[in-house]
Amino acid sequence: MGKNKILVALDFKTQSIPSLIFAAGLARLINGKLTCLYVIEEPGYVTNMVLSDDLKIKIRREAEKKLAQVVHENLSTYDIPFEIIVGKGKVYNKIIETAASINAQFIVMGKHEASGFKMNYAGTNTLHIIGESKIPVITVNYPSEVHSGPHIALALDLEAPVKEKVAKTIETARLLQANVSVISVLRSDWQHLENKFNRRLSEVQKIFEKYNISCSTKLLKENKENIAKEIVLYAQHLNCDLIMLMTQQELDIHDYYVGETALEIIHRSQLPVLSIIPHPDIRDQISDTTLESLIDPIGVLEV
Image (tube, rainbow, N blue to C red):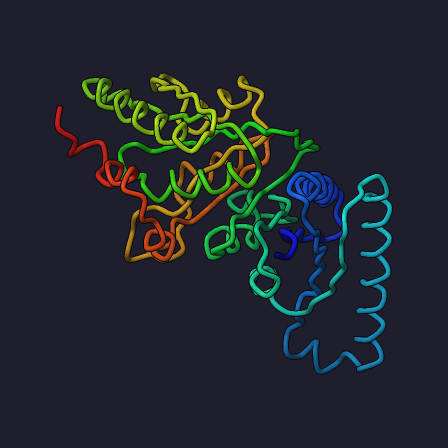
């Protein structure tokens, strides 16, 4: 069996370095291989016509040289195999395409991009990739180390079906040999459902423990802070290595929609955030009957 593979997307900005370091630590943790990708943005039609073939070759060679320099300077202390790739095209398309072609376990990238628009604080390319990639995406913006036996905070919305989310977390936790803390928030207008939420968390905890994954749960009560901030602060309080969340809302009319709470967690968190879309093909692969009790959302459970 081949090594686990991780794709890290770099853009030569200083915020790329934490992504590279985190990806290297992750590769070492899972005995994986690191693919370092830089994408030359495809020029517009007019610009492409003006650029000579010699200049295009020069741009590519300079990018390859700079990428090699950045990677070697920062990975000198890591005993991991890696490769360097310079691609060309739409940045988000090329990242998703490359990750799929190498069968990557994770895509790692910075969450911020240069932009004059405040609404794009997570970066247009980043949002496209999080919203469209079937491969889990880890966004990193601050220096972070991956510890042996990492601690994952799973942000779980118990008002929606959680079968696929728990199954995917089990898969990830086993790969990383991680322990899990499940965090959910009881909204102020749902206080009468506190017993149901706690019962569902107990069910989730037992399923993780069945798979020999250490699991704790916490039901936070919504207060004056918003839900995203409460989750981020509690994950930091637990000294977690990673926040994990499912980013796509349950909307058939919008295939690639990153939910508002998920987006704000990605924006606020100083911890790396692992984003996964619960695609239908994940649902189809789950056959464990112990997960069947998690199909229904909390709102339709019997008291």
